Length: 296
Image 1 (cartoon, rainbow, N blue to C red):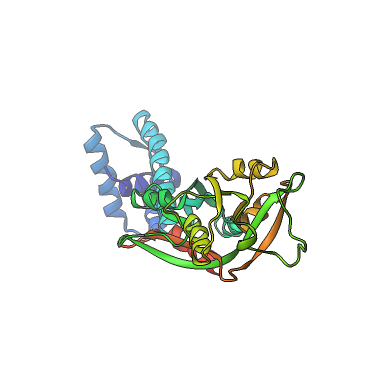
Image 2 (cartoon, rainbow, N blue to C red):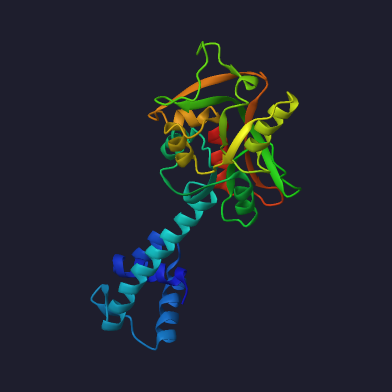
């Protein structure tokens, strides 16, 4: 038996006659009668018996009708869900987010959920290099990363925006504060202060900060690196160190007891953000919908 025969059988049961079922199914009566007979022969059981003008179910027919309803319902659900996944309106979206986060991500997810309420999310937070590896391993389909970064030949990247860096220090125990908060600070003023970098060697943020000092022939007093941003914020709050961070950190940690100052020299000190995915793998419809939502 196949799903088509089960649907024929359901129609016969619900209509009570072959003629009425044939009309409902837009078929002629002889083929429908033949299908019922073929089912009975395959099962070696009488499924229906005549009761006056109408057909009624036998015990075997009642059992088949019970399962036929379940099977056709499951088939309809499967067809519907597969179509939704194919169209990107259902399923699980796996995305990676850089440790320094993307401040706009909650608003983006709200907008995407309004358009695609049946989508679930698998979100991983990690450093940019690890996120690229997770994309290669197909653990996530899309990842927000900090640039610059050696992406190799297997990843595509969509540049999104750049944001300025800021110097942050403790609000209660600052090691030093500029004379004018509005004027910002220059890297030359920071070279003697204890700095904790919000990344590790080889990654974009770490490279940009190191390179900025190097181009000005400055020797920063770097006391370490900390890729755990929540811990870095606590260290800055305690007065243990200061840090140079992308502006996003201030948006994510609004309640932190820290002071922030724009870095005015070099003025081109920016932190680029990009979105990466596998170059030779077609994005799922769901991921394409997400990218469209991001870019609109």
